[in-house]
Image 1 (tube, helix red, strand yellow):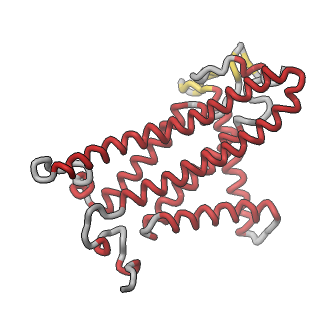
Image 2 (cartoon, helix red, strand yellow):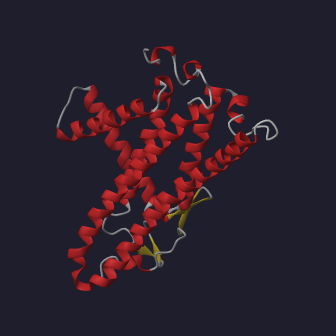
Image 3 (cartoon, one colour):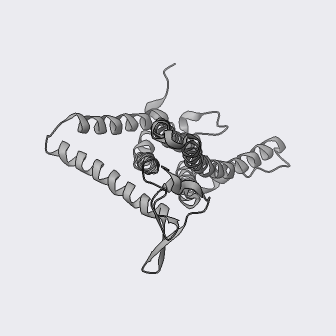
Length: 267
């Protein structure tokens, strides 16, 4: 039966081999394939544009990159910060998108070695999703410190409860919110990717001999879900950065680093 190798659908990834003492899992193998594909596509597109070559595929890729970059400039209020955060946000988007799509390809999960799945989608590895979520939140805090200073950024969370009890409570909620964002970012992507894997198992099992007709429809749906998840991660990265560099409780926001003089509204 097609996709029979997915029958286990284990939450944990499986160790396949080792490289210089580093364990290599099935998600890492397929993740490496996805990243190579992504770098090849983006690199060849950049090279072709540099040489003045154009076709429909190159136009599609360049249109996607330019559109995503424009979104970064629209969401992050500080142009300098927007240009700095753009490489990270775009890298996360394309990495999640391509590796998620690779996990939907036919044969993933059905090819086994010693009873273990040889390939598995990288976003179904919680280590991967937690790592990119951690990188995102650390980067957000870095730009918050650059915008407000170390003590100014700490003041967003730590407020004297005797002088301002409501502000202290709000700061505590903000601190808890930072950790909840980290957890939510990692679990949202992992949960959707793993649920997609399980959905393929269920459809393949229930369809029987008609799996060849039903699975392509589910795969197309999962490709769409992969795009949505990559775009959501991309957007949340920008929104969290924008919130972090914005002024908090300042009666004169135009003096905030996130609001340069040129961005003031005319009276």
